[in-house]
Amino acid sequence: MKVGVFFPGFKPSAGGGYTFEQELLRALLQLAPETRHQFTLFFAGEKSDELPAAKNLNYVWIDPQEPPSRIRKMASEIAIRLGRPQKSRSETKALLQKAAERENIEFFWFPTLMSRPIEIPYIATVWDIQHRNQPWFPEVSRKGLWEQREAYYSTYLRRAAYILTPNSAGQAELALFYQIPAARFRKLPHPVPCIDSLPSAEDVAAVLNKYNIPARYLFYPAQFWPHKNHANLLKALGILRSSHGLELDLVLCGSDQGNLPHIQSLVKEIGLKEYVHFLDFIPHEDLIALYSGAFALTYLTFFGPENLPPLEAFACGCPVIASAVAGAQEQFGDAALRVDPVRPDGIAQAIKDLSDKPQLRLELIARGRARAKAFNSLDYVRGVLEIVDEFEPVRINWK
Image 1 (cartoon, rainbow, N blue to C red):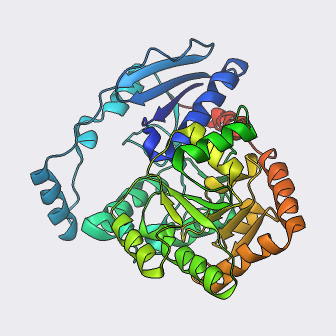
Image 2: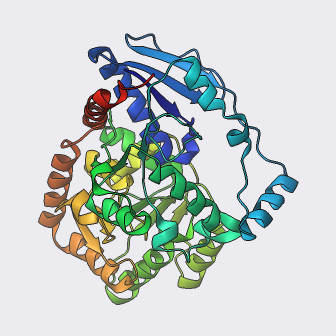
């Protein structure tokens, strides 16, 4: 069967989206030659000559979409608020549909949350539908975003032949909000990124020196969105210092999505200016070094049902404190300390427990490493190949 796969071309600054896309691309390059199916990878953006030739793999670039003008954006927002459906430029041009028809594609897979309108049977991938679960966060509700997301998912998900979700919590949310039959769900956990080699102690020390970071620190790599919950982590640090006499610096890295000034003002208000390090976006090799050297990862997002950074931390031997969001138990098992993200005192206690109980910290590191080996991008793509095989007897019934 001829299978299309769409890669939107995330930038490195996109964080988890970029990592996920690169991991799946690497796995496809390795596994596609072993299948009986022919894969065509469709890329949005500028053409690249760096992709290697491989059996059962073709590459196609479709024209990138120009960003809409300010006037078009305003018109779209007004139309959405009036309840009038609007066609995007990609819908009008149907670039992916036309390209897929030229390549005689029979089945399609959208491996990330980014898709394009298409009338070919497809596999959809869902990371979260937090605009439904927590619509009060501005990043999923302001300026017509809630309406746009709802219009997108209502069509995209209901029309999919299969929907990939990371865990049972994700399936339950989709079944509740979009009334999708259970038979169309397939559960594939988020793959643990491949880390070719971990940095040496000298390499870690060099990165800490580069950013002027002390040897003992907490790490939280996350873009500055409100749902990342930096505020309650900062309050927990204040409690650790004032109530327990435990002094740990905090390293934050990630691009500003509009919330950075608010977090910086909280740092000053709590009296942590000397102890919180803002690094913005950093190279991947520095990211791995910071995981490897951290006392712990404190990943306290409000969003689920799955998250990537704790998996990266597992692979780097970094103990994890994570939010007890829906799906966290299934994703992390006993490899992470789970805390209520709205309770700074509970967050502080978890950090103190790791400090007071060195054996607990070592146990979490060992469990995390075992968890990291359990499911990688090759396992994920093999799961998708099984779905392709499953759908083939259905698809042979029409041209």
